[in-house]
Image (cartoon, rainbow, N blue to C red):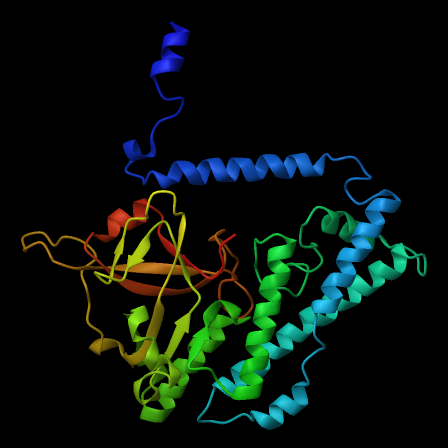
Length: 354
């Protein structure tokens, strides 16, 4: 009987039974595999995990490789002169504040890696923090002393190699901004504190049009890839901003119908096209229904208020600025299915996949 059951019945319930997409099963298996390999790494022998002469040499090589990719700290005072604080342009303040945050991260990473290399080379005493960092680097993990809440880094769930590559891309984006001015399309995930950027965009519009900022919100418009030629000059009349770099978790955005649709089989995360965040009076923003309205005709189109997070953890704490450390904003996306369909699938936008 047991053999018959195992041969003719599924070992686990299908996700479709609970109204979930078939990819939910893949997500579960992926997370289980990641957890298992994490345990396997943690119980490796000392030599394999960074101990011993061979392990220390490998860690020193990794540290020197990261140091070679790390630029010097940004010259804040020179940038302040180039982008002074102006009542009419909040983006200058956003740039300088983000550079200050990145400088703290650069100094921390450079200082801790330099100390680790010197300690493993026998030049200084190996501290407890350097010893923990050595073990974490050998496992391909970002050191805890860099990550929040202990360190000055931004939230990220990437392994060490992905984290370093992401940091390089972020710093290059900031340098391009310094050298060539504000980009026509902002990479939202590359901003250290994106909430300040969004507030600055609203503030620019409010001051230009003499409207109280608490009466303004964003109208969200997805721009198909075929219209990318207009991205060279920025939004029409300079109102709002174009943002890119987001990912859809649990669904995908179809550029044929310009609506949110179910994920393709096996596709857990999909790239999101460029989005125009257009400030306007909140009362003037069209309201799309999120579900069927009792007693009325079924709408042809719904609006899904899609939350945007920095990481797939989708959880954060309330910081001293009054903002969440993970949640960024809610973007309304058009859909032919009601909000409840996407809520059940846990659809959200992410600044950075794992």
